[in-house]
Amino acid sequence: MVLKTFGWSFAVTALGLAFAAWQWGWEAFGVVLILSILEISLSFDNAVVNAGILKKMNAFWQKIFLTIGILIAVFGMRLVFPVAIVAISAKVGPIEAVQLALDEPERYEALVTDAHPAIAAFGGMFLLMIFLDFIFEDRDHKWLAWLERPLAKLGKVDMLSVCVALIALLVTAMTFATHAHTSAGHMDKSTTVLLSGVAGLITYLIVGGLSGFFENKLEEEEEREHEEEEKAKAEGKPVSAVGLAGKAAFFLFLYLEVLDASFSFDGVIGAFAITNHIFWMALGLGIGAMYVRSLTVYLVREGTLDDYVYLEHGAHYAIGALAVILLVTIQHEISELITGSIGVVLIALSFWSSVRRNKALAAAGGGSSGDKTEVTSGV
Image 1 (cartoon, one colour):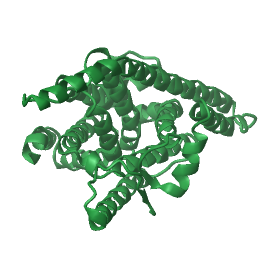
Image 2 (cartoon, helix red, strand yellow):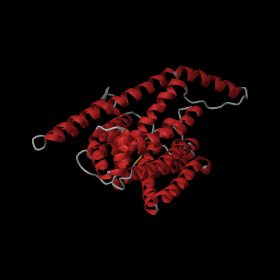
Image 3 (cartoon, rainbow, N blue to C red):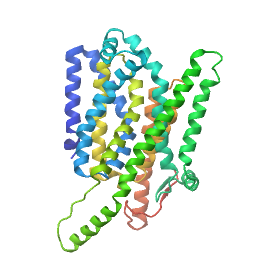
Image 4 (cartoon, rainbow, N blue to C red):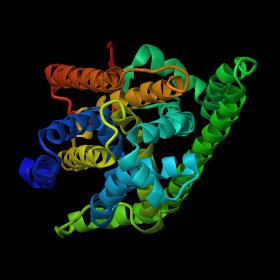
C-alpha cells in the first residue's frame, strides 16, 4: 500500500536528485534535498486538510487531483509563480524574468522580496478564513474544548469570520500606515496589503461559496443514491461508494488548488533563504509537493481522518498559525524553522490526543473511533 501510494514520489525524488547532481554537482544535490524536506514539513498540514476535501470526490476527480493537480502544483506554483511575481513586480516579460533569475539572482531575489507583502496578505487572508470558518463551527468532536465551545457559540453570529478577518487585515495594514511619515513607500505598501488581503478574502468566498453551492445542490441526489445503496445491500447486490462529481467536484478541485497555492506561498518565499537558483528551487519544492499529494491520498485511502478525529483540528490550528505568520512577515522576518515546526508540533499533538481518545473509548467499552458522540480532549 505504501509503495503503491508513494511510488511516484520515490521515483521523482531519485530522478530529481540524480539530475541535480549530474547537471549542477553535489551542492545542488544538497540544496534540492533540503528544499524537499522544507516543503514537506511546511505542507504536512496541507495534506491533512486536502484529505478531508478529497474524500468527498469520486475516483475520477481524485485522479484529476493527482494528475492535472500535481502539474499545477509543481509547475504552476513552484516554477511559474516565482517567475510571474518577478515579471509583474519588475514589469518585464516572463522570458526576461527567467533570464534575470539566471543572470542576476540577487536582483531577482530583491524583486521577490518586494512582492512579499502582497503575496503574504493574499495567502494569509485566504488561510485565515479557512481557520476561522472551522473554529467558529460547532462540531461533534472538540479537541481544545475550553476554547472551541465558546467559539462555536460565537460562530452563530452571521459573517463573524469575515468580520474578524477584515479586522485582522486592517490591523496589519495600519502597521504600515503609522510609519507613512518616515518613508514614502510605506503608504503604498499599506494600500497593497489591503488590496491583496481583500483579494484573498474574495477568492476564498467565491471559490468556497461555489463549491458549497453545488455540493448542497446535489444533496437530494446523494440522498436518493444512499437509499438505492441501502436497497442494493438489502438485496445482496454489490455497492460501490460514489463521491461528488460534475460541477460540485470541479469547484472542490478548484478550491483545493487555491488552497495548495496559499500553502505554497511560505515554501516559495522561504526557499529564497536557501538559494536564489530558480531551477534548484522548482526541483526541490516540486519533489516536496509530490509527497504532499501522496500523503493526501494515503490519508484518504486508509481512513486516517476517521480513526484519528483530532488530526483535522490540529491541521486547522496549523493553518491559523501559518496565516498569522504570513501576516506578521509583512513587517517582520520569521525563521522558516519556526514556520515549519509549529505545524508539525500541532499535528503531532492532535495525533497523540486522538490515540489517547481511542484508547479511552476502547477501555470504556469498545466504542469505535468513528463514534459521533462528542468527545473532548484536555490537551
